[in-house]
Amino acid sequence: MRTLVMIAALLLPWVAPAAGEPLPVKNHSPVWFGLLFPTPDASRAVAEGEPHYRLDLDYSSIFFVQKDKGWEFLFDMELAQATLNARIGFSGGVEAGIEQPFFHMGGGFMDDAVTNYHSWFGFPMYDGQLGAPRYRFSYRMARNGAVWHGAAPYTVTAGDTTFWLKKELCAKDAATISLKLVGQAPTASTAEGMGNGAWEYGALILADREFREKGKLGLSAGYIDPGFINRGDYFPLNRFYYLDASLEYPFGRWAGVVQFTGATSPYGNAGPDLLSREWQAITFGARYLTDGGKKLEFSFTEDLSFSAPDFTLHAGVEF
Image 1 (cartoon, helix red, strand yellow):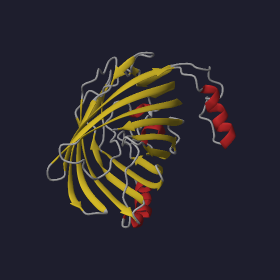
Image 2: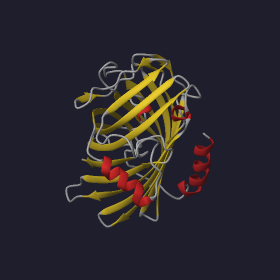
Image 3: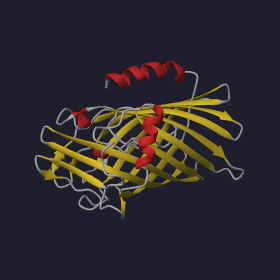
């Protein structure tokens, strides 16, 4: 949490003169599967009576092996996620929305590319990654011998459904501050899918401000109460804290985006380092505005906390 506070302190002076429309960064760390992780969002609500829709496609390479303190992890896979998002505005700066993810896990095709990526940029490999069988699929998470259920490989499974209500608290020409309440219903299977088995809730403060009629910067921060996981083994979870900061700068129809996302651990100190460490990621992306008003997005996310995934590729469209 200290790291998140320090980063927020560095970014806050920039929020005073700026606002943003962040990229929808997802947390694909396997120990977060099924948990409510807020999708970064702009603070301004969509216009009254105006529906907005978006489709996000994410692809992650995941490898992590660890055995400690009664826990066992063996994750070697590639994960594809498609997310459908719909929202509509109401009077008074109110917005309601719903989000539904779908997942596909398998051995994938990027193992050689991942090895080359680490070699080219000098990034260290995860323990055991270099000698692991190529294109293997493995999903194993166990505590004291009790194996946690996971989605079946090479099938499409639904995740839990997220919904939200957003209210603008202060809206001026260049700045907006909003309160966003989020919830996640246990709609997905805990035995064969990506379900968590619990209702989850959270609250976020979103702050945006434009600067010089060009760039935008946004900051969102808050907390989530994830309840528990009941996926073959009941395990209570702690409240965790969330931070996202994004900077967008336009270049004609294009805009470049850089973004930091982080969260404290909902597992506390109950297990090995993979569970207790903060999750942090940096994202670099671009957004393109079409003649018809659609927004196309492309981005690359690198995990900074060395807790998997290696990286995530993203493409999205909003209309």
